[in-house]
Picture (cartoon, helix red, strand yellow):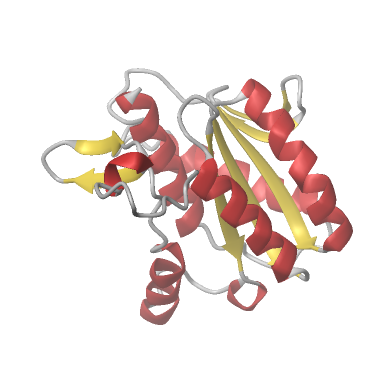
Length: 197
């Protein structure tokens, strides 16, 4: 499980580092660009694929749920362009379907029109999921950043700031890596309210 969690964290980091080159008129263009980006970054000869001796396949429209992207057949990625109210309502069912087939799910919104529903879904799935149900990470790519250079210091600082949301189930330790943590461990006093339940 630790290796899978480390790989999931690596894919999240790569997606957070990705900046769409432009505001495309169709979701499939974002999917193609992210697929190419992940393929290059996860299979780079300098960094390798998490120390693996094999290439990591990135699939488009894959599996029983027709995942927008599937990373190594283990991580399902659902992408939305300019997420609006009707897409957000549909997204809840899509997340449930993804969780039936993937233990690790990433939702990527390239622009959001309905932030209220986005935040509701993010709060529900990022804080309430545990390893038995699967993990869901939400990543919002803000339209004002499209086409900017991710190596520019201001853009890099903003991307890092946007990515600093820590998952309640991951604790990073330089000596150990990434540990899966039961949220109940955070609440030692029985009178404390556990928001993860």
